[in-house]
Image 1 (cartoon, rainbow, N blue to C red):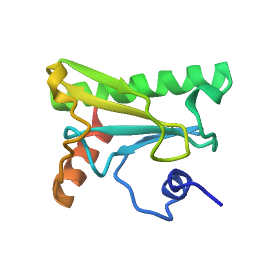
Image 2 (cartoon, rainbow, N blue to C red):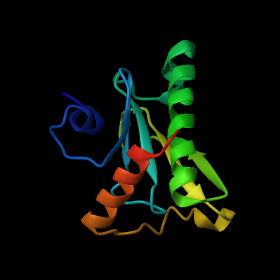
Image 3 (tube, one colour):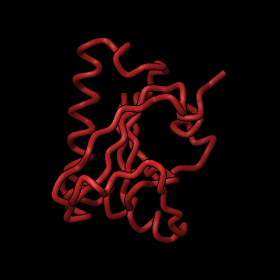
Length: 130
């Protein structure tokens, strides 16, 4: 059975797409820690990020870097934090979270942004120059 993220990639479940390549898909987290909190996932179904082969993982990090640059451009954050948790969905993924202080990441406190705000953020990230 396809994972939740595969179903999102295939369009079976709607998402706020930020970027897509032949091998990777980036979309807004629907329960973000900060606005523009984005997930980067491989289109290949692998449970654990570090089970991806080295070449593919390297390309995924390069794709995530492009998305992180867009997040910085759009949010004007100081840095983009990279988190690899992977317990909530059995499909490898990277969290990209815009931060200005270390306190900006509180995984117990998630935002509930309106649909219009999610759409506005996703559109701005898609159009960002990086």
